[in-house]
Length: 252
Image (cartoon, rainbow, N blue to C red; front, side, top):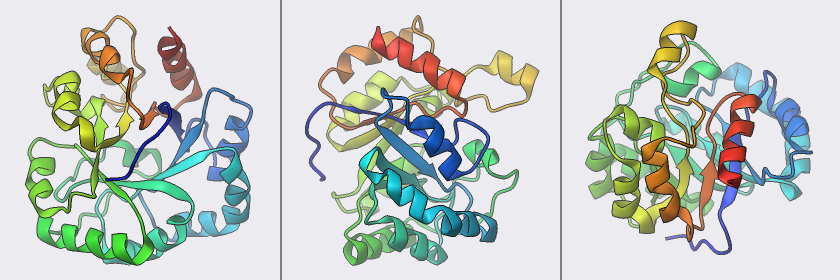
């Protein structure tokens, strides 16, 4: 497993304002409380590749300012190897979804479609093993729908970590604190966000990836467990207003 030292790192996605990667990085540069940025590639098509090409030099300019991670496309394909090869020298780790996840979830931030690709857990594990060795890359598998993480873990080498997503756990009726205790030694990043079904029914946006609220029992139970956590805490919401609200709660 990758060693984590020092205190936890506070991160946000590369989409907190409408705009490109570089536009978001410029916006976040002055936000001193933000130490890391999760580069989002929920969808990696020709348009996204052109944007990355055009802004690559500017993204590299921010490597001294931010610790970068990268969220790989919703369903991994061998064709994504070029993206891994390019980002491996820049990012601390890659986050990926286990095989079988067809939820649109956050990919609707970049596009209103997904690309379903049939892939079994063993094939996904082999692909990750190849990329780990070839690019000296580190990967975290994210909990998504019930059972997918558990189905993939037996096929993975122990050097693959876990990204704990609180919103996904809450939607599945699981307690984030229990999950953290169970996988504590493998968790390299936490996607910290809540759910709000009432607002989602009104605004038509995602049920999860909502701002955290300081009075929520699940959050109050989780916070004491994070005092010695040395990984990344990513406020994975998609507006600066919601991210800023989460920062204030973390400060308290």
